[in-house]
Length: 265
Image 1 (cartoon, rainbow, N blue to C red):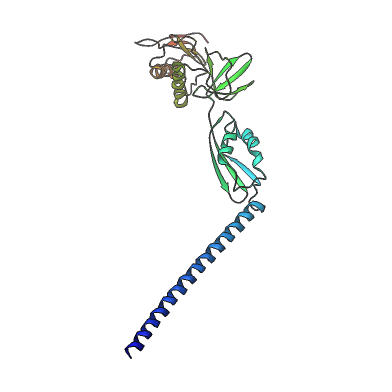
Image 2 (image 1 turned 30 degrees about the vertical axis):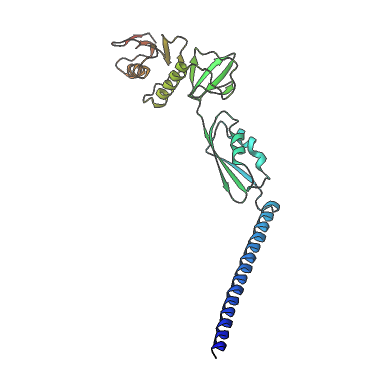
């Protein structure tokens, strides 16, 4: 009797063990099945993405209102039309767009499934140099943005005293830190000028005798020290109706009260 009970207990354990093994095998088969289905699904999606026309680019939108570079950026990126939006390189698009010296930064976004948006931030022209019958437009960092015949109505300041020698587009026209710093200071003054009297030209041919021209008034600034303070004094005198200087000069290039001379109109 005891032996019979022992055999029953042994058989019960075997059954339980077999059931666990069967469950493990079923679980493994289920996992394999799920993995296989996942692989098939992924392959199917990949084939669909590559072969289907669903993700073929139909439009490239240039955003950010890039007045000076928009058409050029559009031309340099029109090869995106017809490509698969899933596989285009943002880096390549940015490199193409930045071939234009006016482009400061580029942001790429994708409007799935068929449109790429290129947002362009532009550098602003600040100065221009007249040389050899051409006008060379510079930004605030003295980088050459373009060479053009006409700069009318573009709010650029004529820069005198810098000679251009084989400067490529996008490169700085000077490697002199003193000159670059001076131009940046003038750009900040131009940008924040609170008056209605704008600088027409700046002469930096002599750093001990820097001059600015506002209308028919010559501003004598002396050296490149304290340019913002000197410009503040100069603009204050020019805009003062009690002084009423329209033609002549104002000398603020020394310590003490400015000296001015009014010519007859």
